[in-house]
Each structure stands twice: as C-alpha cells, then as structure tokens.
Amino acid sequence: MSATISLQHTTRAPQRGRTHGGGSSTAPVVERRPARRRVSEATYRRRRAVVGTALAAFVAVGAVTTYDVLAGSGGVPASAAVSQPARSSVVAQPGASLWTIAQEHRGEISLVKYVDKLVALNGGATIHVGQIVVLP
Image (tube, rainbow, N blue to C red; front, side, top):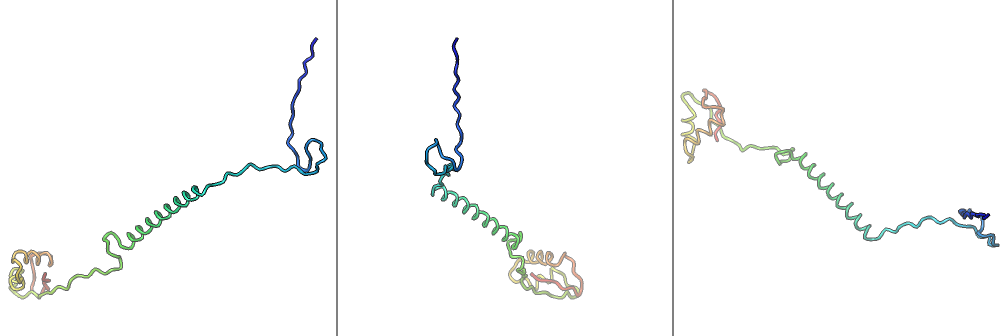
C-alpha cells in the first residue's frame, strides 16, 4: 500500500504591523502601490497643441458668426445707414411728358436711355400735372 501525500502551498498577503518569517525585525510591512506611468514631455506638447488648435478653431468660428450676425447678408454693418445720392426733381407742368422732360434734362445721355430711367424711377410712363418727377 502506498500513501499519497499532497502538499498544498498557501500564501498569505502580508498584513500591516506584522513581520515576515518570525524574525525579530519589528519594521512594519508597507504595501506598495502600482507604479504610475510617467507622461513624457512630448505627450504634454501634443496635448497642448491639440487644445490650442481646438481653441483657435472655436475662436475663429465665433468671430465669423459674430461678423455675419452684425453685418447681415448684405455685407454692410446693420447699423450703417444706406444713403441714396441726392436726386433732383421737377414738377410736371400741363402738357409735359417724360419724353419732353428727358429732352430738357438729359445732358449727353441718349434720349431713349434717359426716358427708360425716368420710367423706372417714377413708377411708369404716365405722369400727372403737379406730380414731382424724379430725375436720374
């Protein structure tokens, strides 16, 4: 008959305040934390570059949005007054037409072009006595 002997190896984690192996040392056992990985300077530079780029993009988008809101779709600041050039005008007399007014005031512009501008500025080809006719 043979006997089988089984050996079991048990390990215990050291506890604070106890010593290892029954020796006469009274120094407490200190548990070690896992070592922290050190972050390299290159990693810090990359992180700073990414954050700086994101911040610059955010500022640029904000500036463009602010400009669009203030300027409107026309590209002119919303607070700017749009001024029209001062135009001269005449009062329509009896028997006057846009054609006769154009002959008197056209200068060196062709008569047909001047009459077309008069029609566009005054809302049509018909005028009435006493009406103010705006000249181009």
